[in-house]
Amino acid sequence: MTDEDDDDSVISRVYRKAEATPVVTAPILADMGETALSLLARDGAETDGAWRLHTETPEGVRFDISLTGPDLPNHLPDQSIHPTLIPAERPWVGDYRLIVKAPLIVYDIYWKPDAPLRIMTFCRGDWELELTALAK
Image 1: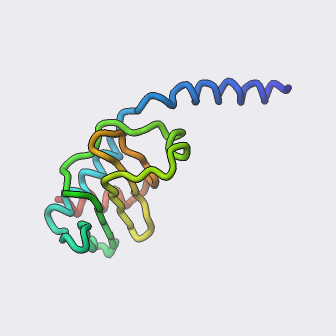
Image 2: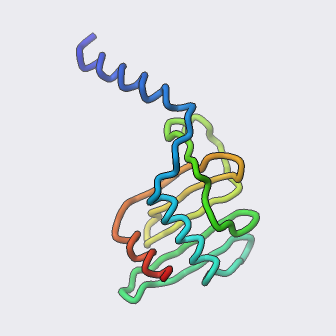
């Protein structure tokens, strides 16, 4: 066993120890989700059991926002599941799924009212500022 193997083992043990603990949903993740939900509430339409909004900024940035679920919530769970548990709990399906495309999927989360949210995709970028500007 090399020193490098030893370092990886220590990192793995520390990471695994955190698996049972949900983490606080990152503020930027909550902000983007709540912004998307507010846009859906203001300008979206419910079709085929999902809320949808196709919109564009004055600069031409296109957004497709969708939410599936039993209703249109106004906030996200305060906690997120530890990332290492997501692949271990497949096939897990939440009651809600929020997706933002700009034009690629930049934000995709699942959650249930009584469980921490699962972050499937979250790509940082200029789209965050553009989405926030749309909500004003």
